[in-house]
Every structure is written in C-alpha cells, then in structure tokens.
Amino acid sequence: MRGLQALIAYWDGRPVDAVRLADSGSTFTPESGTAQIRLESIKARAYGQLNRGSDALAALSVADRLRDHLIEGDELPGGMMAFPVEKQLFYSSSTHLWLAGTQHLSDAEARADEAVEMFQSAPPERQRLGEMSLARMDLAMARLGRGDIDGAATQIHAVLGVSARRRTESVDRRIGHFSRQLALHPGAGSPAAIGLREVIIAHQGTYARSAPARRQPVTTVTLLRPGAMGAAVAAQAVKAGHEVLWVPEGRSESTYQRAKQAGATACDSLGEALERSEIVLSICPPQAAEDVATTVASHAFAGVYVDANAINPQRMQRNRGGGQAGRHGPRRGDLRTATWWPANRSPLPRR
Image 1 (cartoon, rainbow, N blue to C red):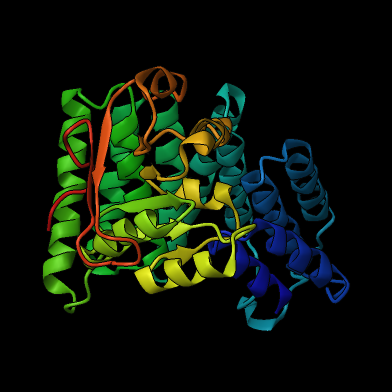
Image 2 (tube, rainbow, N blue to C red):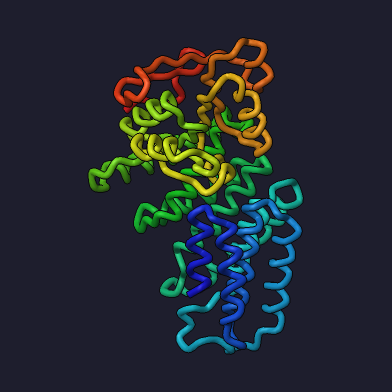
C-alpha cells in the first residue's frame, strides 16, 4: 500500500511525500520478495525529481544490492506485486533523467535500452506494454538530450503504435512532455525534428477526435503571484482551455480565493509548477519583478518567460527576457475581459 501511495505522490509531482511514504513503507515490508526494491526505486526517482543526486544514487545502490541478494522464486504467489528487473531498470533510467548532465543521460540511455530489450523478450501474451512504453519514453528522452533525434524518433514511433491501440494517461503525459522538450531543442528546426513533431501532433489529434467531448489543455502556464490582474488573465486562459498553475505557499487567503475563482490549479512547489509548464507569466508589483525572474531562472526553466510588469527596458533586460510585453485588463476584481500578450504576440494558441 505504501509503495502505491508513494508512486501516486511521485506522479502527482509531490516528491517529498513520495520519499516519506517510501520510507514509511520500509517498516512494513515483508522479509522476502521485491517490495523493498520497489520502494527504494520509487525513492530514487523522487530524490531525482528533487535534484538530490547523492540521495538518488544511494537509493539506486540499495535497490541493486537488494536485487543481488534476492532468492529466485522468493516472491508472492502469482507475481501480481512483483517488481521485475526490467521495471527496476527503467525506474533507474528515470532517476538519471531527472539528474541530467552528460553522464546521467548516458546512464539513463543504457538502463532504458536494457529495460526495453527485456520487456520485448517476454512472450507476447506476457508483455507489459504500458511499462515498456514508459521505458521507451525514457530512452527517447535520453537520446534527445544527447542530440540523437533519429534515435529518439525510433522509440517514439514504437510508443505511438502501442498508444494507438491502447492509450494510457501516463504514456500520453510523457508523449506531451517529449513534444514540448523537442520544440525547445537546439535541433528543433531540423527535418527529423519537424517530422517527428508532426507525427506526434497527428497522433494527439486522432485521440482528440475519437475521445469524448472533454477539452484537453492546449498549454500549461504557471502564473506567479496571482493578484487582481493576474487572476483575471488566469480566468481567461482557463476559459480558453488552457491549464493554469500557481503556488499557494506564502500567499494570502485573498490570493487563494482569487486563484480558485479563476480556475487555477495549486501546486506544492514552484519547481513542480515549472516542470509541468511551457510558459511562466509574471504579473506582480514592479519592485518584485526582478526577484521573481531571478527565482525562476534559478530553477533552470527552459520555456517561455513572460514578464508582463510595468518595468522599464533596462530592468526588462536584467530579467533575462530582453523583449517587450504588454498587458491590458479590466477594473479591479473583474475577471471577465483581461487579455495579454508578450512582444505583440500571445504564446497561448487561440482555440
């Protein structure tokens, strides 16, 4: 149970809770089986998400030692809760992807590649297609990070083939994340990258036409400090079908109520919000604009940063953007008619 709760916390962007739950689960782990390996592997990914490299690698090492001492056949009957080697390998690859850097990308690729080979070697009726697709997504991300777009494309095509027959939310989320990273990649303008994005977009469009009328967010935006103007902008973005995130930590009750009324989704931390977002929108008091931009930059955010504040061009340059932004909105407290744009062009596509 603790392992499942820890895994849910990890996928929900709550790595601190994931570590806590995994540690708690260790006290209930049976003396035999792979449950402890699973908990240490989940913990490693959560530490990776927190960018705590030494802790993440230590958890991976514990999982490897436990695997080495595992007695063959020492598992629960039926193997429903088993944590096989291939799954441990792709949890390891995910951990290395979080940690980033040349060596970690190489390690992530090696482990994900081995996991895919092991998943593929199982008889067709016993293949874990969803988990194999997630391992392939790790492999694609590692190859993209190393600049091997063609190698990444091979894995993406295989994932899309499975997804066309059997869709899962976790795989869809990973495909969307890959597409966003590909758009930000230095090689995004190459024929291989353009072709791959077109294939992904076509795949997503096929699903949108066949799925129920539920609207899918087009763009995920983090809104910093949602005051009256920011809440108005958030309300319009949500109304247009986009997902707007904000971080309640340290904010007032009135700010919380404004964000809730606008339809914004609360995140536990700024790091979580930035990881999920393609755009960051800063609408705050001018005197705070520079500090806000510095805080976002410290998280190595790679998407679009929109500094929509009443600041002069010199401060705009210091805030890393170097462009110009404008905003126009309603009277204080009116959430009906706000619009905004950076450099005369909104990054939010119209629906």
